Length: 265
Image (cartoon, rainbow, N blue to C red):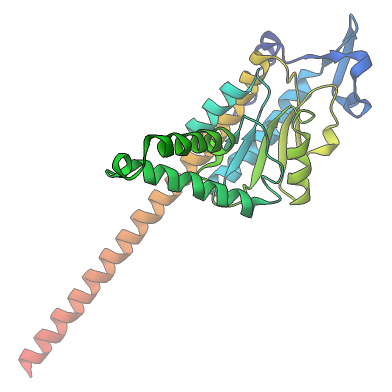
């Protein structure tokens, strides 16, 4: 896994922090300097932190576990959802529902309801079984559920990790993950507390170009982990097929041997 390039981060504006008066003192180790009342992030530390986070997330993906992406701010939501879909990972880019993690059993009931509506609509008799008014009500329920839970519709258990864009904005998600000891990875700007999550990436979390370059890097590492998993699964399949073939050949040989011995007798 390659590290991010300093010049690329600079071009994307990853180094721009918040106004100095809005800073969180806990971010001091990640601040390079102050320029015209704005804190400048140390990109060398961004590179190292991003590499550490990406390597860890790659291993999670390799193990076959799910990573949930959380980004409800408008600068990030569309791009993050696209990347999550490409990776077949769950995501929350609309409002975070309280209890999405800590009360997952209730959320799962809503997911089952969404699934049952989809099954209902796919039936040939759907139009004849329900009136126009009933179909409209069902459609409204579906739209509401899809908006809130569409990104996690395939999630059948609590994710192994969260990747968050702007931990201040997604404070409820952070609190819930911490309660359940779910590792939190995230973009952390100069107004945030990096100690509130497990793997911080000091970076500008307000700019689309900054969010996109970090998301691309993280997505690539997860994709690599998924490829490694498929490779391992393929190697196991080939090994099992070989062992089964060898066993079958051995049994056949033993059977032929017994048959010859019985003929001699």
